[in-house]
Length: 311
Ligand code: UDP
Ligand code: MG
Image 1 (cartoon, rainbow, N blue to C red):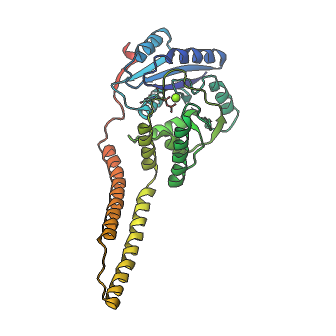
Image 2 (image 1 turned 90 degrees about the vertical axis):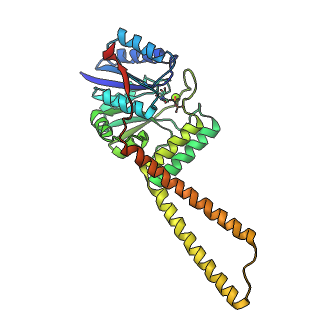
Image 3 (image 1 turned 180 degrees about the horizontal axis):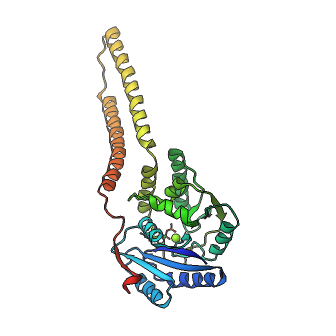
C-alpha cells in the first residue's frame, strides 16, 4: 500500500491543529487505497501547539512530529518535514486550513492518472491579504520572474503533492537561505497546476508581517539570481560614460570661453546622487556577501528539540 506524508509547519497554531487533524482523518478514511503519515513541524511555538501535537501523537500512531529548539522559520520547517517524511508521496500543507485537506484526494487522483511528478495548488486571489499585500506580492513575483528568468504561476502555494523522486531532489539542495518556491521551480519535473479558491485563515493572523515578507522577497531574488549584480555593474558603466562626456564638455567650455565652472549647489547634488547610488549598490553586494557568509558557516538549518520518538 502506498503512503502519503503530510508535512505541516506550525508556528503558534494551537487553535488550528485539532481541526486540521480532524479533517485529515476524514480524508484518510475516504482514501482507502493509501495510508497516511501526518508530520507536524513545531517551529518553536510559544503557545500550546506542541502540547496539542503531542496529545495527537500519543493517540494516533500516524501522527509524528519534530519540535525545533526555537523559531527557525517556515522554510526550515518545510525542509525538516520533507527530510523526516517516509511516504511515497509527500504534501506540504499550511496549518491554518488554507490548503484544504480534502484536495489531497483530488491531487492524488490527478497524480495517479497522469505522467506528472507533482500536483501543485494555486489561487490567483488571496482574500486574506488585502489590497496592499496582494499588490506587493504581484509586483515581487513579476520582478522575480524578470530577474531569475524562472516561471512563476500567479498565486502558487507551497502546497503540492509530490512523488518521492521530486522530494529527494529537493532534499539534495542543502542551502540554508532557502526559498522553497524557487527550489520547486529549480528542480523541475512535470507539475500539474490545480486551481482552487483559497479560504480565509481558520483562526489567528498571518505569521508574515510586511517586513518578514520583504526579507523573504529579497532572499528569494538573491538565492536564485545574480542579475542585480550585473545591473549594478551596467549602471556603473553608464555613469562612467556620462561623467567622461561631462568632463570633455567642461574642458572644452573652459578653453573656449575661459569660463571657470560656477555653481556649487549643482555639484553638491551630483556628489550626493553618486554617493547614494554607490551606497545602494554596495548594499546589493553586501547582500550577496552576507548570504555567502552564512552559507559558508554551515550552521544547521534548524535544531531539533524533540520528536515523537521521545514520548
Ligand atoms: N509558519 C512557520 N514558521 C514561521 C511562520 C509560519 O512554521 O515562522 C507556518 C504557519 O504556522 C503556517 C504556515 O507556516 O502553518 C503559513 O503561515 P501563514 O499562514 O502565517 O502564512 P500566509 O498564509 O499568510 O502566507
Ligand atoms: Mg496562511
